[in-house]
Image (cartoon, rainbow, N blue to C red; front, top):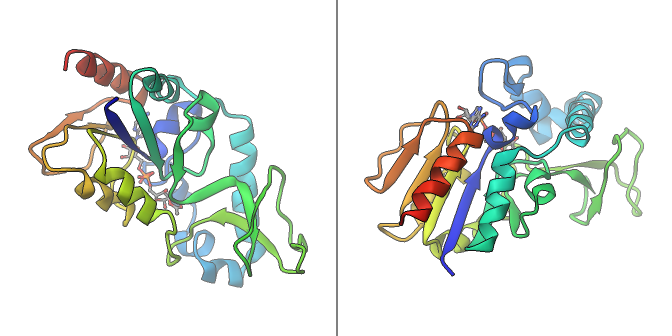
Length: 225
Ligand code: OAD
């Protein structure tokens, strides 16, 4: 089976009603990133940060996968598929994808500020919620300035790609955006985004559409390969 590697970002979940970060009206429009997505922000005002992610978690629990998530999951019938997602939602998994690597953490998990034991978590995190060792619980999110522990496994996955699909990401955040450089030379790349970043690669096929319709275009292109 050919190996399709997918690099997904917030845009794949936009049609499920979850806001992206950098579009007009995106999450970073109303918030200072340094306040809500850095360890320094958490140290300064933990309540603000917990509230921000508690909101995101509540929205996620009311959201459903859209057809792009389902189409990506259905690719597993014919291909080996690995999804590397920058998203902290679980919509790929809920649509049926079985091999999902989360680069930036997961909203439905938490950990303590002091150790890396990851706990399932689907309710609000409050100040005073402590792990067994007595340390404050925080969202399992990779904040700016923190290491990205899953980047090395993600690089290894990219090295084995036969086809790369990039969907719904502004390709502005590293190291995630650099992953496309690890696919073998000549790997066909499909990039679905209504407002795509400029990527210079002669093997890239940019599909200027939303994730839902863009995935149909990719599926058609794959079937004629
Ligand atoms: P961005 O908000 O930077 O980019 C979202 C992309 O989705 C943009 O290029 C949009 O054009 C595109 N888009 C919007 N609607 C779409 C739709 N219906 N279908 C397809 N694409 C659509 O989000 P990311 O690139 O995912 O990290 O951001 C990367 C990281 O920056 C996030 O994981 C997050 C953020 O800071 C952390 O919080 C650690």
